[in-house]
Length: 172
Image (cartoon, rainbow, N blue to C red; front, side):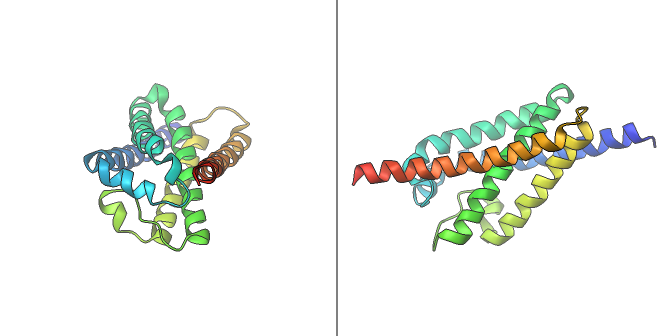
């Protein structure tokens, strides 16, 4: 099998894995939406922005599924997957280090994982999406761009946390 065909097949498999993950995760959240919102509201990081996040996350997951389904948009979908799962991972790292209790708002079987197991699971998907981007991208700046996306994803989670803290301070 030639290298281009091999890369194409690997990218397709990575995209399918992300499609399954995001379809399942978004559907689980929407099927038990009230519980999802309550769990986000119990998060010390996101409680003040839980309503907005509860709508945004499943929407973004479904958009990524659509992007990953079509070869023409797959690279954008892989970049988006990389950012989203990096953000989820940053959230988990903060939870593991700075919170005594936070319910998992993932839904379905993912909810049964411990925070550490979930972090490992996410890291695997971060690596799959990064490898997919590297294999599919034609630019020589792909590593720099992935680095910028990691920093951006972490910055977004930090900003959500700070915004949530600020809102809580103003309510007291």
